[in-house]
Image (tube, rainbow, N blue to C red; front, side, top):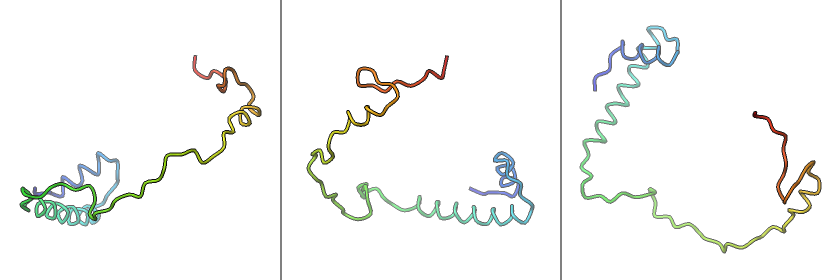
Length: 95
């Protein structure tokens, strides 16, 4: 994909970014390099390669799903301004 200076200025305008000609020219060079890299990666033959979720073969260490903290529900609700049926009551802010 060929990118022009006008394209860079148009995108900068859409993003509401003020760029002068020197900045637009620098951005054009950087974006063109990125597009060349993307084209190289798309040209690679990956037909026989299975997708993977991570670059390394990592297995997460799992732990038992057990409760490690004591139940402090009653303590927390004892200092709340208003509680009803174990729920915190808050002022209505939207009509």
